[in-house]
Amino acid sequence: MKPIFQEVSLMISTKKFSDRLFENVKPIWAKNHQHPFVQELGKGTLAEEKFIHYMKQDYVYLLDYSKLFAVGVQKSLDLEMMTNFSKTLHDTLHFEMDLHRAFAAEFGISKEELEATKPTPTNLAYTRYMLNVAQNGSLVELVSCLLPCAWDYWEIGKLLRAQYGDSLSTNKYAKWIETYDSEEFAAGAKWLIQLMDTLTEGKPERELAQIEEHFQMTSKFEYLFWEMNDQLEEWPL
Image (cartoon, rainbow, N blue to C red; front, side, top):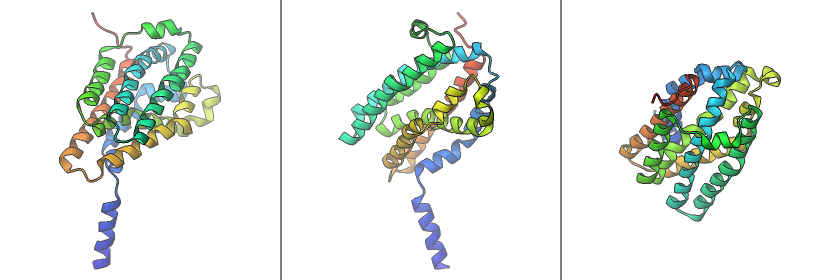
């Protein structure tokens, strides 16, 4: 029996915290992946009015999301970490947002319209939650808020390509799917996953539970973001 116990002990010791996060968030992400907005995006049947609403809201979301990487630079533990956070910030502002503006233009959304967009109540609640944690919490708490968006968008990109890849050539939203299924986008998500595992190594369960709570909360906000755009949410007054 001794070798068996040794093997089990080894398996437990090599399990990463990101594995725990991924396993426990599956019920939430499953709802994200099956949301009508996401599925219609994959099929290419999503109403353009809803996609335009999403593009505008996602643009102002990315402006605040980018600030988390700036806070990450400030809270970094070494030069390599600072460099990675600053590179990701640069890529978000000068690669992802440029693509966003170009793609928005294809749907008749001008740069001026994007810049004039005001966040909806859900969008504002989501970004303010992340910024509050980033500014007042630890570095790993900041990462726990950054990670769900990056990781789940990557998962959605892979899922929609797997589900609807045969019809991408006729899907007007194909560029969106291809962006989030790309190696370039995956690299950023993988770096955050690795950083999460590095920063949580050896931490007590009390801290791990708090980190997972942020991860779960921002994953729930991801669902609300899809719902917000599907319902064309605006301020009621």
